[in-house]
Image (cartoon, rainbow, N blue to C red; front, side, top):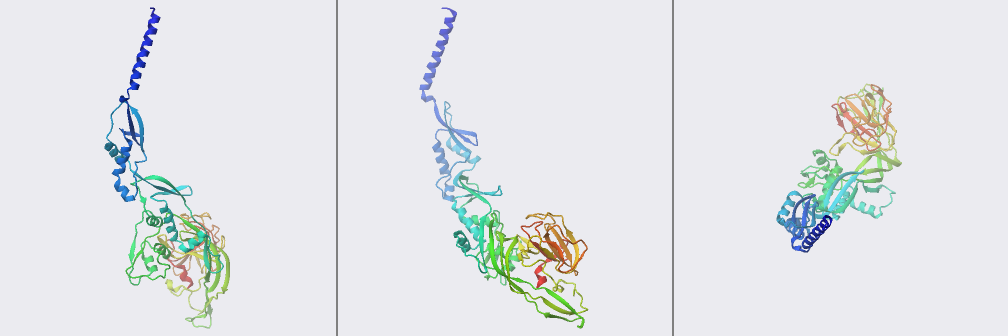
Amino acid sequence: MKGKDIFIVTVMCAVVIVIYYLNIGLNNNDNINNVYNVYLNGNIIGKIDNKDELYALIDQKQQSIKDKYNVKNVYPPSGLQIVENYTYDNTLNNIEEIYNKIEEEQDFTIPGYEVSVSLNGEEKFKLNLLDKEILDEAIKEFIYAFVDEEDFLDYIEGSSSSLEDAGYSYSEMSILENITIREKNISVNDKIYENSEELAQDLLFGFNHEKKSYTVKEGDTIESISENNDPPLNTQEFLVANPKFTSKDSLLTVGDEVNITLINPELSLSYVMHEIKEVEEPYDKKIVRDNTKDPNFSEVTTPGVTGLALQRSHYNVVNGEPSNEVVIEEYKVIRQKVDQVTTRGVSRPQYSTQTYEGVGSGWKWPTNTPYMVTSEFAPRWGKYHNGIDISGTGRGSNIYAANDGLVVYVFTGCPNEGYYGSRCGDSYGNHVIVSHGDNIYTLYAHMLSNIPVKLNQEVKQGQIIGYMGSSGSSTGIHLHFGLSVGMPLHGGTFRNPRELFR
């Protein structure tokens, strides 16, 4: 045979031999193992021959979890993958060994729901539930902390009565956050809410709150308990934390325990409050000098009469707190106010003593009428609100000096539109401080920047010293009016401005 023919025969023989042995191998099934590769987070942790046995062992080992959460099954971690494979390698891992590796490295899971809560496109928090109905009930309980249950149900059913007489109604009620819920196997080592009561408490008081209680003693009132708490509460916050009481005048029983935890809501219940109510207009106190009277003479010659009006207004409310800005739609005077006139002798000094109690006559309300006080001198959000917020007179409306005095501070460096939390102007925005003698000062805050008075300028009672705005830390157009014994923000002590008009 020629060399070329020998080469061809040799190659053909080799091919026949390879095919023969491949055929033997393919038909010898005893040498191929059907196994399952076990992966955790993409890393192989072993091989087993029965995946159902692994699932059964996981389920059996987690009986305590099933008992705790009242679920039928416990599932392996989300990062666990079991992939079928064929191999000649007959090395397998013990199923118990695989289980221990899984338990050491990652959590087991149970079926539940994941809730994601975001505001303005930013995620605020996530939480886990056993049942999605827990969320529905918890949100209802959260709402009932701020809105009467019957009123809420009337609103939902669309059966709220139209507002004709004194009373209130709601519109545009909603939770401001975007809430999504999806089914998911959740880790047994994560916080899982099993009932609506616990979730409602956390949504109202904050996820990391510690409940504080107080035992009622003789002489206690809702106001005294609230104000003496640390941090202080306002009465509305107390009523939210203790829904069994309906008003600040509710009677307390000695020995009862009340909740004095500061609310710190995780959700934002927003609605528009429409209100018709009778409002009082305080009378001004005027002093008349009479040359014919003894210097020590002082007598009220015209008694003051408080004005009364029926006011229709609406304003936004978030978690029980009214916005700084109020829209007054109608103001109908029922009774005209009559200013109090006190006649005094000619030599009586304008300020009778060097103490706060010596001041109390001759003070003028610092805004136009009609108006609404949206926040009193009281605790708010864990600290004292050191003045009163007055709204309803509109952007750019006049703000007046409450009495004669000297302008001792003017700040005009803030934008006219502020926002809640702004630190501009020490949070007061554009503001003015007036000294009235005898260490008495008034503060006018959140004004527009075009303040017409200057430092060291003398002003008269009723003189325009600014215009209502929303600068600094503000949620709407209003005036923050403060009263201080001593220079405000420099060692002075704030007092309730309403004391000036009593």
